[in-house]
Length: 283
Image (cartoon, rainbow, N blue to C red):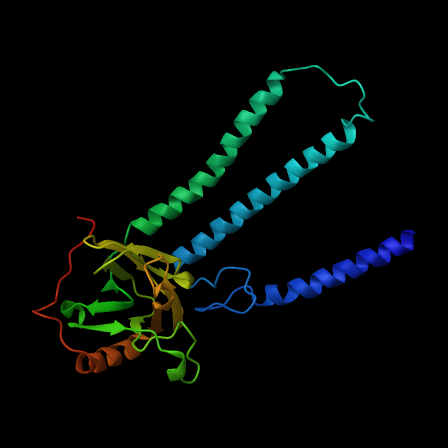
């Protein structure tokens, strides 16, 4: 019987390993989701790395608490069932236990709160920006404006590339006809608003998510430390084509960004007026 149990346990372990291994191998994509993904995308900004570390810390805390509670339940079932404990205790209070189960959760919450508040502070306090981009959500596409006083002075729309028009390595439902381009290792301030309904500007690899609210200018920031193409989507249920509002950001070298700026000034129409300065939402 023991050998049979051992063989059964080995078979179960092999099955779990074969089922989980592909998910682990593809748990994290860079700039895009992966088939069978079970984890977050690879972080490429300081905030994203900090958020991932906080997520891991909280997961360990949750795991320990879950195992502890499960162990208590098993002990209660085994030791205090009717057969093992026919005469139950009539004790109604235990001061030490009541103090412990009040203080311990408070301490756990403090351990979680400290890195959480630090992360929130780093997300909300925007460092001196090297570049500002204004993002406007429309039903259902994104519009981007580059300020003239930072080498831009133009704006463009970014629409989903339909399936029939996909080329090369473009990703279905995530590719756009015009990409946002930013230089690597530069602080980019993103001002977000909406022209019609609520939208949400989200980029998983940057740990970036900011609501686009009509009549309101929100701000966020990122500093991409790796060149590449990164994909996101609108994350606010905004109507019929909510699922077709992708975001594509290309992070390039400073030289490539300067060349793109020169090309973009010719490709895209100039913003009305000087289009040079945007309000600071923190003022």
